Each structure stands twice: as structure tokens, then as C-alpha cells.
Length: 93
Image (cartoon, rainbow, N blue to C red):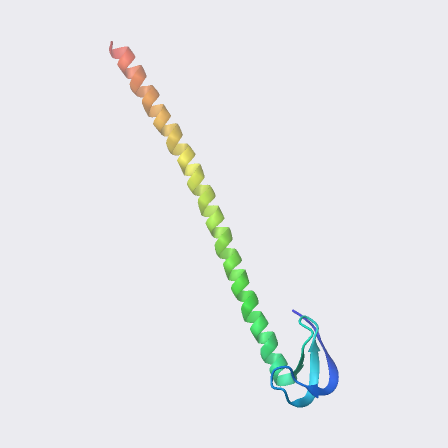
């Protein structure tokens, strides 16, 4: 998460009031302590959403890989079945 440094009194980016403000080094905006706390909290929420989306994407990739492996196995079983039927027919003749 971005760090902050006090810059003295100035206008807060969010509430537009003259207060002691802190510079968010992540976005370079100045916030009063109240708004800075909310600003950082919102970034935490956004980061959690990104992490959740990333986890869901990774899970989908894993599922697709498993599905592909199952398809290959099913194809192998189908080939074995055809070969077995042909061998049985040849033996019966």
C-alpha cells in the first residue's frame, strides 16, 4: 500500500477543507487524516477484489486443464473400445 507523509496545512483533495494534510505517495493527492484513512481503506477493498478475481481466474484455468486431461482420457478409452471390438470381431470370424 502507498505510504504517506505530512505536508502541513493545505486543502484536502476530498473534503476541500484547510486541514493538516498527508500526501498519498501512491496517487500524489493530499488528504486530511479522516479522508486519508478512508482512501487507504478503499484501496484495500479494491485490492481484495483484484485478489479475488485473480484467484477465480486461476481456478478456471485449473478446471480447464483438468477438463482437457479428461477429454484425452476419454479419447483413449474410445480408441481402446474400438480396438477391442475389432479384435473380438476378428476372433469371432
